[in-house]
Length: 316
Image (spheres, rainbow, N blue to C red):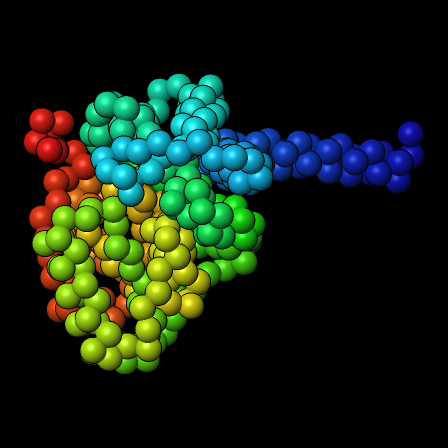
């Protein structure tokens, strides 16, 4: 073998050795990446499940809706709510059997609503059931994921609009893959505020709700709006088309996903008294910034509601 040929083979051997080393390093890096970010695969699965659940809702919209009632004649539930929640739970349990679950319909059926440090899915299978019943075109599948009682990611699929909103802690918020950014408006007089009136028809509660609306309108603001679904209202704040959303009487499954989508889009969430956001309190203000949120808080007439995690005997 000539010196030239020998040097050539030596070059190839070294190149192969270096390639193998890099490949091995890539494999190590890949394993380290998975270990450092254990929740990405969980979120990817949530998006797949939310889309399939949304397809189920869309199909149900084309057929006759079987309406039932929960706490009152205006607190509606349908077979679709129950079937979609069961599909979501089954799909998740098969892949993540050690995780915990809180779902609107399972809680309505008597299961506990207790948040622990365990990875927990908080699900509203059909957010906007009254809209769904009437064919009003804002219905969302809402999937929140919480670890150690802190939101990790949220997925809101507005299925009639075919808009998939996602937010992941520290990684931003998106709609159909495009980045979301809250409005930069700091003047509440130039703002649109979203809200809902809930299902409590107690006259004193209704008076508080309308009193708050009057105060906000007279700030004044550009307008009050409501999509009929908390998850969609929060997505609108995250999208920058509304400056804030507030409500008293909603539940953790209504806002668990939306809250992290708003914050990852650059917004803030807080209690209606201006204190820290408490997922189980049934009270929320979500806004594009603290300036708008703080001004909104001053206009809210607070009325008492039982916490989601209150003992069952204390909820009545």
